[in-house]
Image (tube, rainbow, N blue to C red; front, side):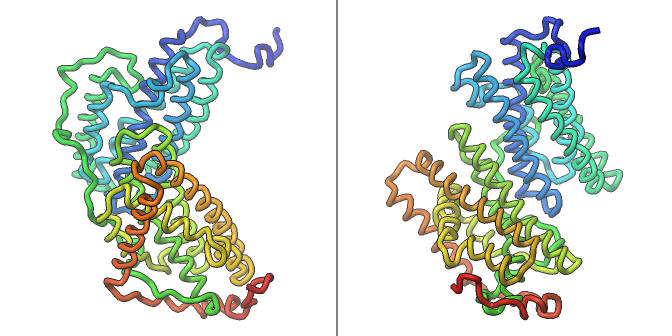
Length: 435
């Protein structure tokens, strides 16, 4: 018997498997599908009201973008030109995903993912692994194993969300009918990996008779109380300042929703632009979860802090370009100053609040914000066609609009937390370095 580790332990080494051209064709179709899923899930992060579904879509759009990026970069190693590999090409799947964008509600959206696209992707990835020669095509094999692991982890989450929203026979029947439409279209498009014949006669849009546009309106459930803004307090009022930090993190869902407009509506940018915005979007969802998780740990109730929503007013008013310039070069860049800024927030949690979980969260929040500013500088340099001075002026105008909108209604005080966080009030009132 040969040793277990012969051929580095790889299976499928003596079957001819797929040729390079056939591998590339399948991977290109799968990369396109993942890219469109990134856009689908990001766009509907804005429209779904269910809080926990919003958060899940934030993760899933990021993972889909990463999957597409890995597959596109593998195509560069398979004799595919950079232009062809990184740019979404004409594909029969376009009609299917254009149609999926018109999900009428959360149930429709989740049905498309749970009943159609995610199972089809898993089946296609597994079929590829069964067909390819693992020795010849090992770089792809390794990528697909990682992708399959993530898909297998998140599909049960989607299924649970779907069953929660499709909780009546009528809703389930409507969602199933929508899924059947998409499933038939997917089959007519040749399957999600493009391995079957295309039936153009059956590949006709039903709802997608015009381009999809994200609605400019707030869509949130009642998981959290919403207020216009909250009263700002200084660090000397330590418990109140800490509560404000929790509520501020919780409210970063609005930044994620704003970035969804950038990701879903800005066209004809190089592929790395979309990868960067997808990451930034997921980071803002993560930061929202920072506030939620810390609030739940402290108060035993994740909804103990409200969300501010004045940001939605100006986000819906600005173009994606101005919005992103204001966020990356205005708001987030300003937080790089010290003091105050992100470093001070981290030090406040570490030295004044002395709260281990929020200290960890603020440490990573600080690191993420540094990354975001660098991303914005890099991407806006190519996206904006004017001078640097004109770009900074555009960012400043966005920041000014935000400030004006913020003053339209008076802020509200946050809940009194002094009885819940008395140790903060009695803790050290100055940082170790004395500032």
